[in-house]
Amino acid sequence: MNQIKFSESIYIHASQERVFDYTQDYKNRLLWDTFLKKADLIDGATEAGLTVKAYCVAHNGIGMETEYVSFNRPKVTAVKMTKGPFMFKDFLGSWNFKRIGPEETEVIFLYSFTLRFPFNMLTPFIKRNLQNNVKQRLIDLKNNIEKK
Image (cartoon, rainbow, N blue to C red; front, top):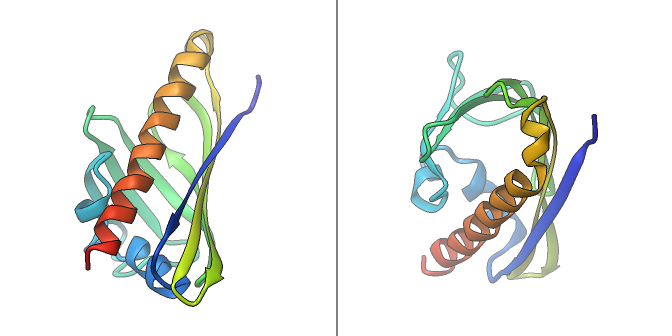
């Protein structure tokens, strides 16, 4: 089955550390991540980090459990799906935070997934939908963090 990948990026007027910390603090997650209606760390975790699991639910009701497979403050985080909707055979996401200047950060979301049959027949639609959601999430993050 074909691995589907895409990335989206945005420049945010804030330091790399500030953007990284803000996005990884689950107390803030629903303030900026308008794609989600629920975002919780699970199994007793109180902060994001390597091997920590999270459970997030999109506004459409689809939920996914993920595990942090990389956590390198303030540069990158990556998660893999551990439990999720049947349509995904696998799902990986990484968020990169690139310092452009003292108060300028490029945030890059990279997503990679494989769809199970028969959902793979809807690949262009699913990819476009996810990509549009990621674009909006980045815009919402920028707007939220820059107004503080």
